[in-house]
Length: 289
Image 1 (cartoon, rainbow, N blue to C red):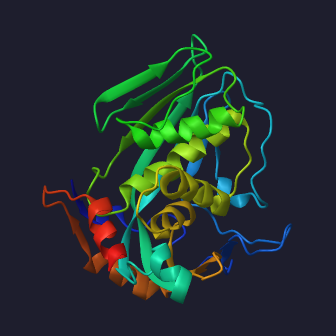
Image 2 (cartoon, rainbow, N blue to C red; image 1 turned 120 degrees about the vertical axis):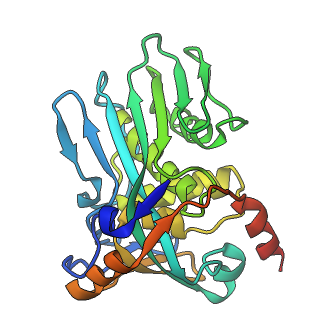
């Protein structure tokens, strides 16, 4: 993968044109507190009416509802990100004590997830990146095992909450290879959440999608990672993302001038070295220190 920023550019939401100030999400927020969400970078398309829906325009917390769109195929995608500073301060071992702050930008390389009806009522997942698949017959739930632990864990969450009574077929593919250092795994987590939420009738906004992706990756799978990638993928644009010791996440879009944004797009190159690394092992060592 070789991408030039001038050709592909920043993901939707970049720059200072969007007046919405921030996304608030956290355990310390009062119940029913008002939240403002920017235009999300992740989108879903429902095939039955060819309508593209930007879920970030919805407001309010996620609610568990009975599936309402049987027979609908949903395509969701979420961008990867470039991190300019603050990496590591989003790890709970640091942010829970001192708070954290990162600056990052979503770029137009996407993780894509497709949720479509199951012909036999079972649950299946097929990964183009790992070139493997798994399937569970009707009545069985996926577990959190390998391979494909991320889609399996997300499918299990939705099944446990009664949101996949008729099964689903899930397909995943990413324009950034796993281990590229662009937050592609978390972008995929957000895309999978978006696809399954749209398919099952679960109403989520950008902040809620990021929070659920964090729950799956960090809470359920126990990955020793931070939370910047999920919020960068769900919200899009160029942002300062603060992680409060209370658990609250504040996303502040940076009001870049058109000239500054153009300079970033023209002056940055994104190139693949062909090598990958395991972020979990790197971050485990960082957390231990």
